Length: 354
Image (cartoon, rainbow, N blue to C red; front, top):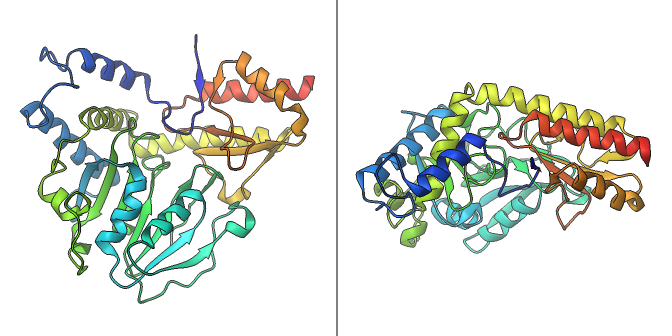
């Protein structure tokens, strides 16, 4: 039975990745051993880690540009704190565009002073702020490039002379981006680049080593770089799945080709939301996310009817986040256009029969 998985994460992955990862659980590359049991110090896994780190830089266009790629644990949530520990000396600047952006600045407050230079909270996080002043004395500016709960996304990035850092958990490698603008990027793998359990961190090495505080070993980026992501036992399966997923992205024609497909999917779904009298979009149109399409019914009393139609069509994971309700269709890289078309047909049928 074909399921159309619109879950916000952990989320859909390419079918080929599921198949290769499943085989590796039984037998990795004919070794007679599972990816779950091989030593992380074995030459086989060291090769996996090296290839994954190199491919992340290649996809971002950052090879030989002073950046290092790491695969760490603790999710993007741990990087809220770790990034501040490693970079915040005097003050950190933050733009608050949603729940995860707010959690990032909240964690940074445990480290030192922060300044929220812009926020869309008063507008229900429906837009990306465009008016703000970046303090010259800040150590860095932090943004969250895509907001999974409210369905907004950056398409133009702040211009600044201070290090720009970003949580890219839900739109990394989904579109061409000026990655070289960023001094630090981090992203939980479980949306576009792998399964839950590992986090990709890409960092320009020259921004490190400037804070005076002592940093705990496993939150210290310099230690992770020195140990090539293996200061402790890494999440071997998560790293392997990320490697497979990034290889799939490359096989599709790279990020440029992936972006073209993502635009097609998002445009089709937003067009139906705007056309259909029973739905309304949540985010400001110019800031609408291509990854997380958030929408509501114009008449909430019809929710049971729409939910039943989705269930009958084998549509899964479309319920909105508990904080705002409504609906959210997460259409990450691996989501096929066919699944989006199924949802659109359900929406059309719903309008005709409601």
